[in-house]
Amino acid sequence: MMKVLAALVALLWSAAAAAQPAAVAPPQANPAVWNPAAPYITAGQDEPGYRSWYLAAPWRPAQVKAFNDYLVSNQVGGILPTWQLLRTATSWADCGQQPFEVPPADEWPNMVQTLRYVRDYVIPAVGPVEAVSVYRNPQLNQCAGGAPQSAHKLDSAIDMVPLRPIDRITLMRTLCGVHSQHGAPYNAGLGFYAYIRFHVDSTKYRRWNMDPAVAGECPPIIHPDDAATVGQPIVAPAAAPAPAPQPAVTSPTPERGQPH
Image (tube, rainbow, N blue to C red; front, top):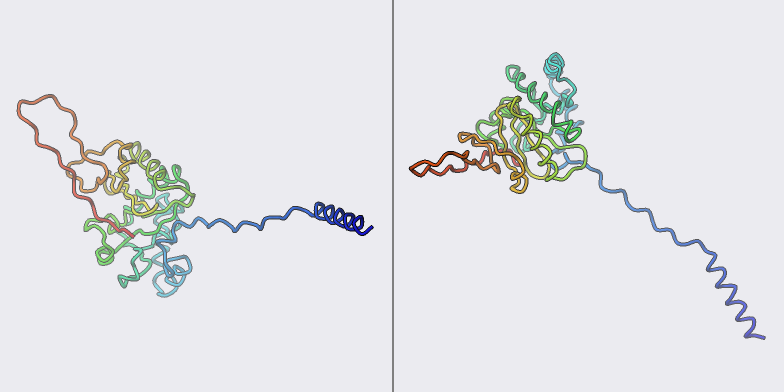
């Protein structure tokens, strides 16, 4: 009798266990938020920092308005937020400089042409972008490691990051293809720094800091006097055989830039 009761209890226990719902796995943590500007922007150069900078001196609102009005009057307002176009260098604090600065008014036309290229070809190719470094006064440019003739000193250059997820190689391939097709009429310069930070200016048609695997897919830009075609080796154009050997064409010296 006891054996029968024990067997019945075991049977009921098994049935009850089988009726329990399957264990539910705990929800996965949210994936990391895509924030490509984070490696380059510190507190003080973010949007709250801009508001503090804007209000810290009574003359700044008028300066910012004049700069914004100039962009709007030249049909390039709103392509990038005006406050981002006032960002200086990533190393502004280490250099004892301001996180934002309104460029000299005589340099503003240079920014107009750069913004046109960003509007016409960069954003359509890679989506919205964020400006992380734009104008640098000469002292800040030198401290930040910029090239002596850096386009940042002319308010022509914008260092940007894409706001849609993309890997470095895809970014390079995409922007290099666009630059090869459309960069020359804009005098567009295109360069790449660490991770997915890239540079556009309208000072001279050139490219630099291309990864070798990507550079090989982009048509070379042949400018023997250009010091900014790293990764785009200069190749002498084919010529008819000559009786005397031609001197070898050497690669140019890399252009230094802001690596941060």
